[in-house]
Amino acid sequence: MISRGAAEDCLKMKDSELTARIRKGETKYLDVLASLAFLTVLAAMLYMENGPQSVICLMPDGRYLGGREAIVWEKQVASEYKGDLTEEKVREILDKYTPDAEDEMRGVWTVNAVYNAIQHSFGNLDGSYNGLNVEEAFPDYEGETSLRLGYSEGYAGFINMGMSLMVGLGFVLVICLAPVFAEEYSRKTDALILVSRYGKNRCALAKILAAYLFALLVTGIIFSTMTGLFLGAFGWTGGESSIQINSRYLLQNVPYFMTCKEAVRDSMVLWIAGILLLTALILLLSVLCRTSFITLIAALAVYTLPMAGLNLHIPKEVLSFTPFWCFLSENTLTIAKAFNGELSWIWGPFLLAVVCVPAVMYFGQKIFAGHEPA
Image (cartoon, rainbow, N blue to C red; front, side, top):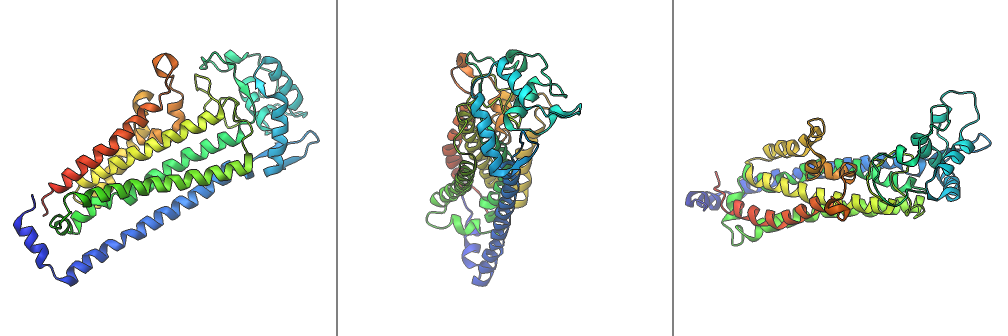
């Protein structure tokens, strides 16, 4: 319960003093705008690294193509070999596209997406076949369905960009959401809120809902923008191919059959789970801590400490329930399916994230309502 003295002090507060405290909080909007500007610059840089302008290929006549022209050529190459990955296809690709040059390292030249993906697993440095069969080249794969070859460049680029961008978004959310409750404590406006008619219930719930809506709105903008850009550049081609076979060497350790479309879908599920989990953690810290600075430091620690999880030999199954490793979806997608291979592990973090939403609404409102203003 709020003390009588705090309520009286709040009511006696001069208009000029109250206005000054409120205006002090307006500077926090600059932090939000600066954070969003940083995220926009980061997104542009990541798209330059993973989008169509990053694609180059070597033509049979020795010329290099780049951008959309290179994508068209690589799709033609992929269409010749699409379908089940076999040793015959591997040999043919290596024989046909290994550069004809006196270079002991010609096997690692950038040639085209299909060749680069195959050479990484089946080729020697000079471009010759290393003799491995499919099972030996992908020892972690336990699926009964044969791996499928296709044009996976756009899907792999989408996932690669998304993982880095979502990690950056996590830092932005920490900066933007840390003041939700803690700023009221430091500005002494919590007393004013708690003596108002709906201060102890609707106000806290409104803050929590606004925080979730902000996080999901930014995430939705990112998803829709990335989807439009990558579909416009790469199209749907190759969505049925196996994500394990890509020139970015991404998700090669996935132990079950997964198409490129499924990899994108499951990554987005994990990214949403990470957003919901991180928002819940920030809100709980904000309602418990006395200042925004303390909330910021605590939230950054909770968010970033799991980075060292693999080095500390913490199981991936445990790390998958942290926001950071939800954003780096590759780590979780390489976990074997549960219940005899029937259920993907991604649904564990997602279910926890969904449960956290009403839990934070309940406990956040209770803690704020029971707060005693200083």
